[in-house]
Length: 133
Image 1 (cartoon, rainbow, N blue to C red):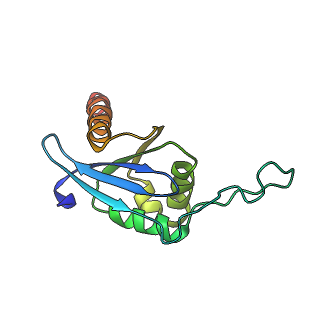
Image 2 (image 1 turned 90 degrees about the horizontal axis):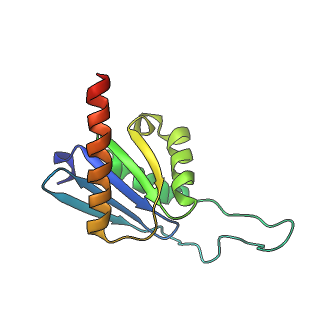
C-alpha cells in the first residue's frame, strides 16, 4: 500500500507514468496511461511555424493524485513530459509541488532500476538534510 512509504519516484513520458512508492525493503508500483496518448507531439514538425502539443492535463491530474500519498518524490523521464508535469504541479497543485525533491533526466529503465535510482537518490538527499538540520 503506497501510504506506508515515505518516498516515491515518478518516471513519466507522454505515453505513460510509472509511480513507485518505496522504502528500504518494499516497493509498490502504479502505472497510469493518458486517455488519448499522443501520436505526434510536433503537429508541424520541420516548419518554421511548428507547434508542440503539451501534456494532457487529465493525465497529469491522475499522476498527481497517485503521488498524494508520498511525503517526498523524485520526477524522472526521458522527454519534456517531466518538465511539463512539474509546471502543471506548480500551477495546479502547489501543495504537492512542495513535496517535489528533484527532477532528473532518465532514459527507459526497468522497475528494479527505477527503484534503485530512487533509493540511491533519497539515501544521499536524506543524509544531506540530516546534516543541515
